[in-house]
Length: 374
Image 1 (cartoon, rainbow, N blue to C red):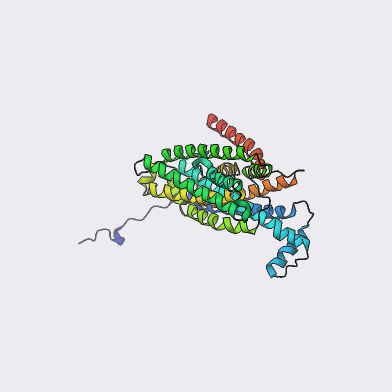
Image 2 (image 1 turned 45 degrees about the vertical axis):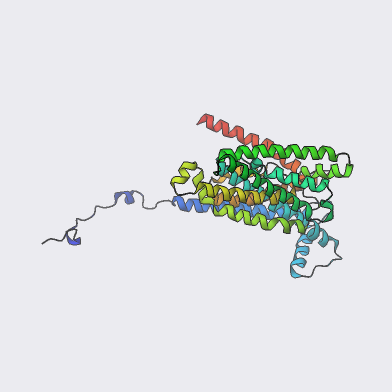
C-alpha cells in the first residue's frame, strides 16, 4: 500500500532558475525603508542640535561656543557661578527660550500631522477646530482683566483653559448635531464656526483694550506669537502636556495610516473610527493648547512642517509624527533666531508667517504642476 505524499515518491524539484538569474538580490523594500528612516532621524537630530546651539549663541550679548559649553557644563555639574553673567544669560535667559520654542514648534507640527491624516487633507492645521483661537481668547481675557500680571504661570494657564473649554464645546455641539455620533465633516464645520466666534471676541477685547496703551500693546504682542521673556516656568508648564499628547498621537500611528483609506476603509481593517477620532482630536487639543499657552498663536508651523516632511519621507505616521516634532522644533527655533537678528526684534509669529506663506504657496504650485503632468 502506497503512502500518499511520501517523500521517497516525490519528484525532484526543478532547479530555481529565477534565483540563478539574480544570485545577489538587492536589499528588500523593508530594509530600504529602515535605512531611509534612519537617515531621516539622523538628519533631524543633527538639525535639532544645530538649531539649539545657534539659538544659544545668537543674541544682543556676544557669547562664544566655549562660553556656552562652559555654562552648560557648570550647570550640569552643579558648579554654576552666579557671578558669571554669561552663565546667567545662557542658562537663565536663552536656554529656556530655545527649549520653549522647540517643544512648542514640535507640538504644533505634531498636531498638524495628526489632523492632516485624520481629515485626509494636507491643508488641515491646528487651528481648524478652533483650539488655537480658544487659547488666544483665554490669554487675551487674562491680560485685559490684569490676571496675567499676578504670576508668570497664570497667562499660559488661562490660555490652556481656553483651549480646553473650546475643545469640549466643539465636541458637545458636534455630538448634539449628530445625535450622539460625531462625524468628521460636522466636527470640522463646528470647529470653523467656533473659531470665527473666538476671533470676533478676541478682536472685540483687543479694540476695547486699546484705551490703555500698555494693555493694548501687551495683547497685540501676544497675539502675534513670541518667545521673548520665556522662563523655566513656561517650559515646566507646557512640556508635560505636550509630551503626553505627542506620545498619544504616535501610539495611534497605525490608525492614522488606516484613516488615509477613508472612514469605511479604516473600519474594514478593524479601526474604531469614532473612538480613534475622539482620542486624536483630544490629544491634538492638548498639545496645541499647551503650545499656544506658552508661545502664543504661531502660524504655519503645523501646516507647513508636516506637509514638507510628508513629501520628503512619505506618509507613514509612525515616522512622520516623530519627525514632525523635531522638524517643527527646528523650524520655530530658527525662526526665533531670525527674529532676534533683526535690528528691532519682532515676534516670531511674524517671521513664521513671512517665511511659511511663500514657501507653502511654492509647494502648492509645484504639487499642482506634478498632478497636471501626471
